[in-house]
Amino acid sequence: MKNTPKVTGFVGGAPGRRPPPISEKEVQAILHQIQEGVRSPKPKVLFEWARRCAFKEDPFTDFHGSVEK
Image 1: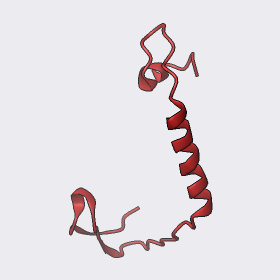
Image 2: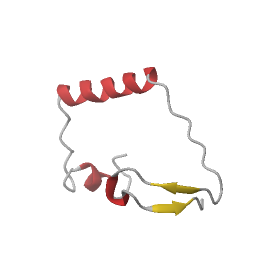
Image 3: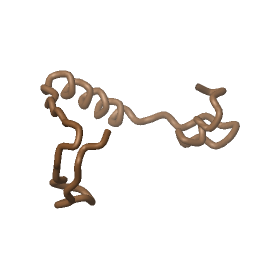
């Protein structure tokens, strides 16, 4: 990863410097999210071509559209 163009800037390291390590608290939070994701069932949502749908949250709340891709 060190030699991959534009990766260190994305991670937060200045050119020629190592990015700062994350804290133990951040590591534990990530591991907890992974474990919860393994335990939690994933909802199965099937979208059909041209099916009408409505957004229920986020910037598109109450926006209606149809499935294209």
